[in-house]
Length: 92
Image 1 (cartoon, rainbow, N blue to C red):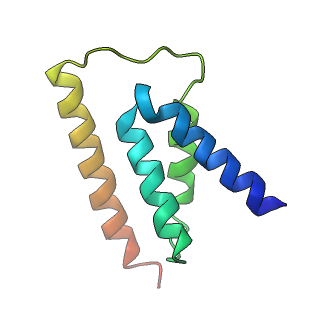
Image 2 (cartoon, helix red, strand yellow):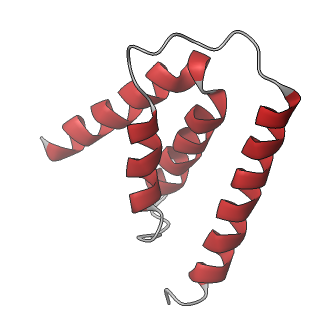
């Protein structure tokens, strides 16, 4: 029962973010794929909850993003990626 609810929650949030926040949806989808194959990354789970909290179901999709917004998304993704790589060595 817990697996069904967790999967429904995660994919519901991915679906809600698909149009309005494609970067967050892609990150959550990546997490779902890696967790399916059993790669243990407990340090990533809090970030999943942060990303799902950023998605509000009543928020209309953004029609256009400025270049500055795209640069911030790329920079944020890079910082999170580097932090995940740095932390992964300590999780063994």
